[in-house]
Picture: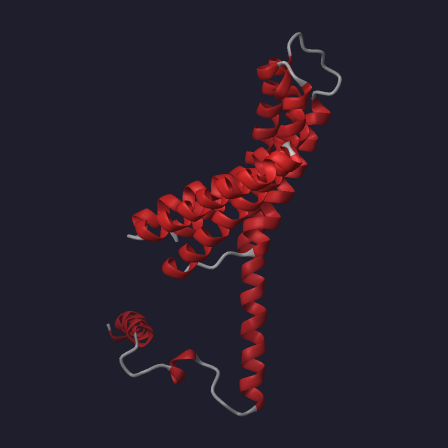
Length: 239
């Protein structure tokens, strides 16, 4: 549970800042480097933000699960590939090749580490809840934050970037938390009910029992729990 939650929060955090760099990269580039080129590179490298955050969290989780050797292997392979590719490509293709190398090596390292973590911790990630939901919330929050401050003039790019990021962060926190709470429980309740009805109908069509106790072992915990509940209900009747 902790591993899945940590990975999900890392993805959500990274997707939000990916949206921030895409929308406000020019402002941050001017604020810190006084250069439009720096902002352009921030926007180009923005899609890597979720993978960078994810890789840091996954490496820490692997070390906590006694997978230091595998984590070291992946990081060493990543560093070795970066050095080789930089030596072979940078002198011929320039800065564009370095950007491509960053994309390749980051995806390579994150994919290996995440695959190992999911295998060791036996965690399953949902494409809807861990990727689509935070991505949609980040897009809405950044778009709304940019629109809210569109007519306001700032004296310095730093104040503009900080204000836009702060407003977007507040909106993202509200959207991601509210939507997850508002949709998560009802949706999974409906899915559970539909699956249960489908299974019960199939069992009834074959004239088989539909109660769970009929398919449990005699010493199953669910049977002991049911027996304890039945005894608790029968005691007032006996009195």
